[in-house]
Length: 405
Image (cartoon, rainbow, N blue to C red):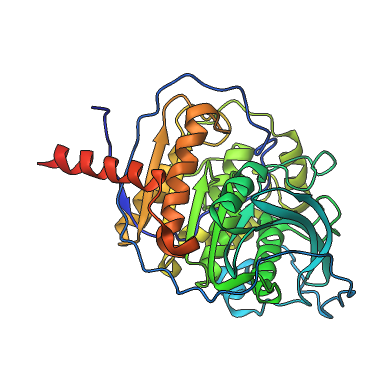
């Protein structure tokens, strides 16, 4: 029987942050032949909401022109502006999500390009709508770091979007500001990206095929960090998944990029971060800056870091990390799980031997199986039928229980 290691924690909190890591969400790498050893924990499922049938979903381009929201909230390098408390207190809205073009139609779903407004900025993205009877539960997909000039809509999320849509979920992936066709805006500590996702969440009710009462979120790498900040701000998301996610401590991330010393800093791994470091210099003093500049920066980190505000965490969370990840330290996911467990939160942690920053082969398949089954428990797509994925998780639970006797 395979070795099973269990970590019981609880729902997500907040953890991410800083600048951007280069190439954090690239296309799938070649398949691995390694065997995955599960690190598993059990979370208590909730009952899914009862669905109200409508007609079979078919998406068409929206003809109406969106009117930008009149006010752009500034994002200066200021502790109050970037604070989790400030983000929780502000309003998120927009003029609705516009479908600009249907680009794919297959037996399982239709895919469309979308746009919406976030603090006055036009933001683009992509959406998959399943075939069948809606309204459908929604999964927001947060992509990782790419060079903006090289990024294309759907990069870093297309495989997950396909898997979720075939399962009966409506998926939406924001490009974020300054990516693809989106307009640019301020983005210190990736707070701008998180605001774009929060404004997207607020506009889900404008989609007739979406059920705004059943929303989950998924994030890879930088997108995992964005996800953590979103979860620190709102309690409207019912379930979440992190995959090779960044730390939720902005100071740890900053010092990891720039070489200053901070407690519990993981050993730096091989990485090329020239682009992220260039982005950092737009906003932040270097670690060798004056004491007053660094003191100001540490005040910002204390108030902006999701992992320092885990008291707001309510969302059940599943965490995945490759043990051979040479881009984002595995320790960050372990630390997050430990912190959530210490606060009695609901979270499940899996680590994958031999898998790197982008899963492939059996690693990707097992990761997808576990994530879909976890989301099914909380969002109940298509009456939550018993699936092969659920049987796999049941077998893991039986093995765990037998090992504990």
